[in-house]
Length: 164
Image 1: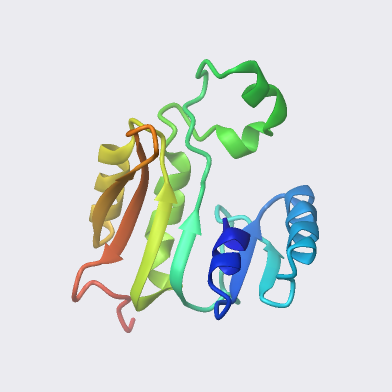
Image 2: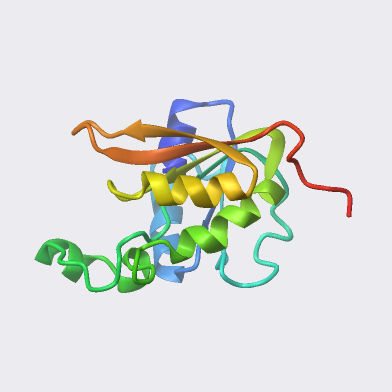
């Protein structure tokens, strides 16, 4: 997702974060092939680990495609066999990674920053609730098939990071 945005925005720079060394190797190779390596920093980190974002700074835009499939879901064989399980499954409801990541977003966003999270087609309401509990306003965006596919999050006024 980062490389697509950078290709569309020649003035932008970004940081791609993944916990998988193999995924980062592919992302780095893609950045080189697309001529974007000078604007795309790739960093290994796991958002479920304390301190993972300490050196990242703040961003105007955070995009994320966290795992969102509920455990035991019936997936097409090409998905189940191709994608690593840690990239797909996120607890019994598919919400575990949102519960970890969303509370960290206020510390990653600038005051006027926006986060866009990919969601499963039936997750707009529960993920919106998680985000609203963290001080975000949410908007649902649909995919080309008309299904809920992403949430746009903006911090409500007065809900930025405290000075404590």
